[in-house]
Image (cartoon, rainbow, N blue to C red; front, side, top):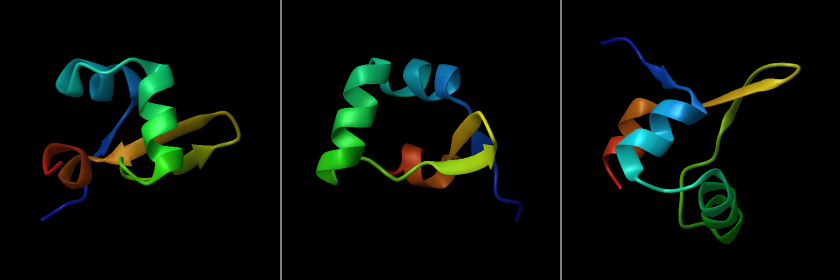
Length: 52
């Protein structure tokens, strides 16, 4: 089973949350941590986001 990374736009569409809310929840420990994909890009593991 391959790990799939979701970009911010897809995470927003799946969760219905705004970028600001996602980052705030992440800081509060209420949302999975993002992973760095490069210097200016991040993503979230699909399994983490879909199992909230």
